[in-house]
Image 1 (cartoon, chains in turn yellow, green):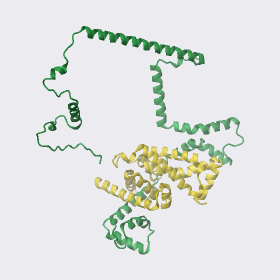
Image 2 (cartoon, chains in turn brown, cyan):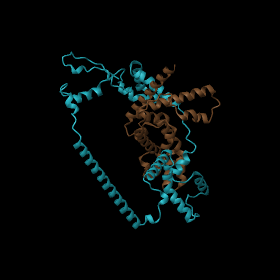
Image 3 (cartoon, helix red, strand yellow):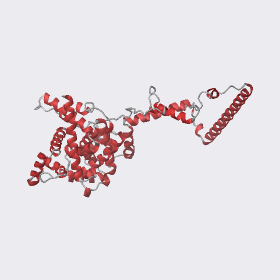
Image 4 (tube, chains in turn red, cyan):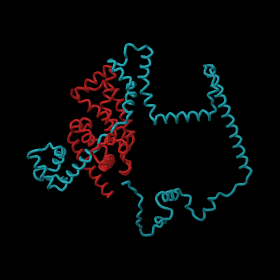
Length: 199
Length: 258
């Protein structure tokens, strides 16, 4: 069964009062939503709170989801994005002027997926190096403006297509592409600057 | 980015095609034009290289694992039912509110559905902290006001008792106000009496009057104030001597964050 069909079936069952269907929805999507939140806000605690808020909102508004109007994942991502915008307005995180080093998160220190399931084919040096790169890239991502950040997260980390991103961000597809280009270029510039400073 | 077409392509068109080119979705004549534009344009060439590098960096990020209790927290915060119970219900092949439940179980479940989202929110550290602070300030206010919860009896909550307490309290307040008024009246009389008996002293401004007649003008006071806000204490008042040539003062007061 395709993802969209399965999601639609789960939503129908859930609206009909099947609690097991709701658990399956939460199980299927919580990691993805958590990743979007985490990469956007940069902190594991905030990402956890926001993921819970997303599911609470989803649970309350599940009846309003219309299958005809788009994929379930797009709807969920739209809810997530709206809450991220609210959170950003509250915290004004873009005004923080931390250095890239201090912006490295607790996740990259402690529990990235690669470290939880160690890859034996990769030598330890390469693991450390990849972890360090991950920390730096995650830190640089937090320095991007929220518009560029959300665009590159949805495209390059969540593999959403341009049309879906345009629906979520409520901007034309051309704007989405332009933001993605600018976001990627800005990130590369930030990282080049960081590496130059290190060297 | 210039609007001039280079190799049959404008920079704006290049920008629009850049994402597709990096995704590998560009082919034919369009791809050739794109490539030759990126080679010849001094702005678009580096932009493409940077965008490609940025994309590579982002793709190198691995998905992070969600915290272990996140799913349970979500389920408790939403449906109010923990995962274990759901699993057993799913194994039984039915929905959660099965027929075999007693009325008390159903009532408990219904109350849990209503209350658990509130409890889940309240269990978050920031809310717990706020509740703690509210309780703390309330208890301090009560103790300062002399209210002891142990002294509150059932009788105190009867309408007649509340009414009596109200009248007693308002009577006390009126009495206190009258007393204060009496004290103030006495004080003002004493002050008047003192003023009438002691001889008048010369006012300090009268002494200075002969030396600087403009000292009392409000304009001068304003000037003094302005100096305090705009200048340092060690800087001379150059503006006060109108015959002097104008002096350009470079003061770096505008600080920028960037």
